[in-house]
Amino acid sequence: MSVLRVIEVKAASRAYEVVIGRDALSSRADRLSLRAPRGRAVVVADAAALTHHATRLNQAFDAAGVRLEIIEIEGGEGAKTWSSLEHLCDRLLELNVERSEPVIAFGGGTVGDLTGFASAILKRGTRFIQIPTTLLAQVDSSVGGKTGINTRHGKNLIGAFHQPDLVIADTAFLDTLPRREVLAGYAEIVKAGLIQDAELFERLEAQGVDAVTGDGLVQAIADAVAFKARIVAEDELESGVRALLNLGHTFGHAFEAEAEKGALIHGEAVACGLALALRYSVRLGLCRSEDAARVENHLEAVGLPARISELPGGPYDAARLLSRMGDDKKNSGGAITLILARGIGDAFITRETDRNDLAAFLSSEVED
Image (cartoon, rainbow, N blue to C red; front, side, top):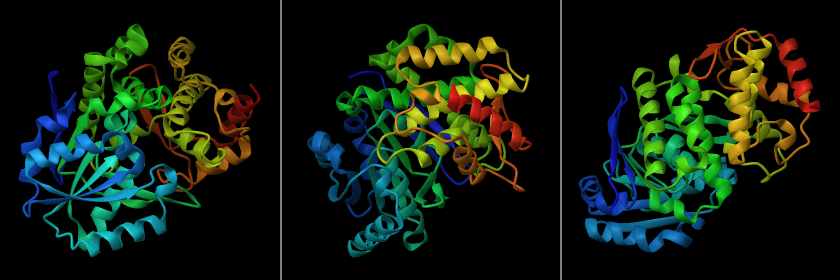
């Protein structure tokens, strides 16, 4: 068994562990039994994840002496709807889930977002455990307590902060992921380096995709989670510094909202958003062009899109992208909030974006 990394997240509302490593689920059966006072746990599971991993899931809970009730759902952004939330809450109520019982998300980030929101509002809050099965979820969405659903107005506009009791990031679950999904998660690891950890970016730049295999993968996940844990501890409700974690996301969410349905995945949109954030910082005279080029080159070297023309799900229209960015939930006073950078590892928040200049930038990027 490989060495496990344990990162503690000290959020104001709840402190909890993120356990990272191969076979982390089976090795932490004791953590599961301690959180199931009735000897039962309800798992909301992605159907695709169950196809590959149902046996390992059941074996781990059997070893913990915990009986499972499994609610199977289809993952993907289509799961994060009002109707899905209503259906899930009804099922949880039918199972008479008590507030002290764990509701467990098993799957990717969309399953975690939906399940966490249901847990947050069911009986005004139940215990919640994350067992993420994708790299994207392990390094990002499972940590920090953001939960929610999408609406026709955009992504994640309805939701709540609801910290989990425990996160188990078992890297053995990643063995069945398509390469595209692995790279999507890798984009979030790169993001951590670009925000406040230049040394992390330099290590990733030197290793390339070798950073997401074996023990290198465990370490990369741990580095990204530790970075996010520090930010969440300082600003749990995203009223200040936590907004830095949205580097690349204002652009990325606009791409996702405009993309042909099912053609674009979150990590790809974020990767391109990271490159755009650096290039826009160069345009404003804030960042060296060499830094933006390094980011673009690294993303493309590992197989991630760094240009709008490289994104699946297009073509994209600059005016519509700007409109989507104007609807972003981080905005305040009608101004578009962006996360920009003075260089690699030196991101900052600006709420003074010139819409006309941003429109011109997007037009030039779309046409490139």
